[in-house]
Image (cartoon, rainbow over all chains, first blue to last red; front, top):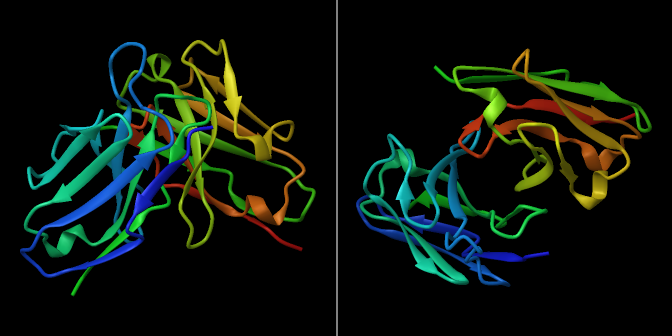
Amino acid sequence: DVVVTQYPLSLAVTLGQSASISCRSSHSLVSGDGNTYLHWFQQRPGQSPRRLIYKVSNRDSGVPDRFTGSGSGTDFTLTIGRVEAEDVGVYYCLQGTHWPPWTFGHGTRVEIK
Amino acid sequence: QVQLVESGGGVVQPGGSLRLSCRTSGFTFSTYGMHWIRQAPDKGLEWVAFIDPNKNYEFYTDSVKGRFVISRDNSKNTLFLDMNSLTSEDTAVYYCVGDYDYWGQGTLVTVSS
């Protein structure tokens, strides 16, 4: 199974500053079809998760442009530029290239300093 | 708008069974691969099971193989999860998820004597 390692486990950010979360896979996530199925999700307190970014860098509808996904192969990053109070929550990466199983990172908790 | 509404959660004794349902609307259910994802209390997200749009194949995480069965009724836009031989390790919020595009609000399953 593919292991997905996400770090840091938690992050305290000043409002208006940027934050970066990393996700590293034990195997390259480039699929045979040429796509890379690495996605990012946000879970605000008390809410269901929602996807922010799909296939590394594509923003879902309604996601603010301060959320940026990047990376390739085995190393990926979610960057939140100019953090706002509504960004508090836990962020997860998910690999969907080598399935089953689909594997999530352990999550990164983002809080405001 | 898109809705996924899970039901069937509750408190069950170890060794017991439950059937979760997920009624969906607002998207073409019959074209979506569907997942069950769970989240134990204060823990991260864990993929549990997947069924393809045409019910040709199903996959399960190792810890539930032989105990859980995922199924769907495309005529009723509904997803199911039959859970048997439940243990305390199955205690979690269970989310119905459509190809990771759409998430339900979750239903809590508590396995306790």
